[in-house]
Image (cartoon, one colour):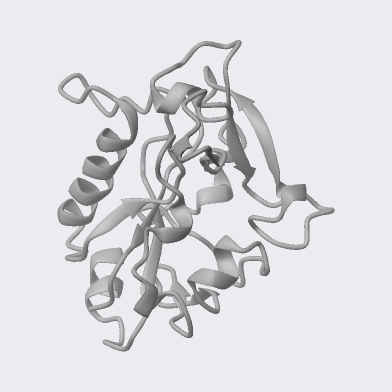
Length: 198
């Protein structure tokens, strides 16, 4: 069903936001052959897109020690280009409305398998990670709130996560009131964003 929906999306200027099927702890280890971390999440998003016939380039929507997720989508696609789900429904007006914490989702976020992202009460979160801090000509490497740059599953370490579904008091998906530090031992979803339109 969802292959048909994706293949019949109107070919207008829009970007897909899809949840990965497999929630993970803060180590982001997608199988025995992948070492974990952000590079593993990139590969996992792209593999899932190919598997489900979504022939676009996807990257995980998350921060690392040296990468700010605000820049994952190229500048020409950040404004006035709707963020949509697998059904072609608009989730956010554009990328900047989403990452700047200006908007709540207007439609459901689905996984690649077509499952509603907020349907599993045991996984009420998605990993985001704190934005990197640029100090004195270099990036901070303390990896605070990023599960040691997505290499840790220790319960005493934390990673910044977003509530899924949103907190009742939150006004936007990535608003500060909808973000919190989660234990790296817990499983959270990974959000995969299409970085260029069809």
